[in-house]
Length: 460
Ligand SMILES: Cc1cc2nc3c(=O)[nH]c(=O)nc-3n(C[C@H](O)[C@H](O)[C@H](O)COP(=O)(O)OP(=O)(O)OC[C@H]3O[C@@H](n4cnc5c(N)ncnc54)[C@H](O)[C@@H]3O)c2cc1C
Image (cartoon, rainbow, N blue to C red):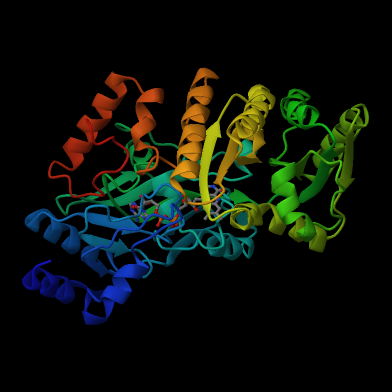
């Protein structure tokens, strides 16, 4: 990058909030996809005006600008694949307003999701989306990826909790979308267009979130089964019984073994799968639904249900669940994480397919995740980084994607496309969909400076 341009960046954000030092650039060159690309510079703006000035500069001098939250994305979204500036949102990290009367909040994109949730608890309110990465990911990254979490089954994903946005467009202009009210249907729904757009249409600088009252009561259960088929079949059966859990998470035996030590009562070797089931609401309603759940499970062979009785036990269960992704690196550093979605009554078919695929290719595959909405994390573990193992892992990924599409599913429930899934989007989207999406991208970003080479395959 030209020295003159860098000096303009310095004048926008100040000398302490930008850098071209190689050590610093490395810190912004990676994300959870485990790929790396060096930016030419990094900038840490602290206001919408500074973001607009940086984008204006990129627009004038035609260099890429890539927004970055915490870099926890698994699909390479925050990577500067074509160089340019990485725009870190770490200083745009303020909760600007909590409006208790209207149950909304206005936050900047760099706010850590879990910290926002903790702050809201003091007001007896909650922001529902709860990705497993909530202790470190940002709301801006969640909006850009449309993140989801265990509670999506009852409360929806990020797009269901966002009612308005402020966005800096590629030409430096500032767009506001949505309303501060629950309802508002004047014009197109631009808020939804930007949610899940992975930083390719503009930089989000403010977010208006919908809030909900904290549920009065919650009960947490662990269901263990010696049958993978039975445990996964139960997901759709529970939901057909008019039981609406706020969590219905699944882990197979390989995932379970990785974190079993963290659980209050580690399962024995006969356990093939486990479900975490939580029910929340008024005390009366929770008791009623919990009793329904207990009697349903009592009728099943090969299943046992345990209730967590203390806060400590509940925390241990969640620590175990949220640790699976990182713990899986114990099996191999060379893993591919997919977050496919299938109709939930077809989860048994998907997990058996993964077991067979693992046997056929002599590779380890573990499955876990948000079973309640059919969103299963499939971790494909190559034994090492050798060309042979990498080829097997790529073969498994391609086979998985074809299977999921044949099952009327989707390639991604929450991690987005980024660069790791872009070669596959035509499996799910037809030519017209891709063409319309490219036209939208061209309209908002005609010079292709906003996070280029993401979502769309290079070959056009
Ligand atoms: C252990 C672990 C568990 C995870 N569990 C879940 C889970 O349960 N559910 C889930 O959905 N995901 C999960 N993820 C993936 C990841 O945490 C999410 O995708 C998260 O939304 C990314 O947030 P981030 O702040 O890290 O964003 P980054 O990774 O920094 O960026 C992600 C994308 O958002 C864009 N972006 C960031 N900020 C802005 C902005 N202000 N304006 C425009 N674009 C922006 C970036 O350009 C990039 O394309 C997990 C990841 C890990 C490592």
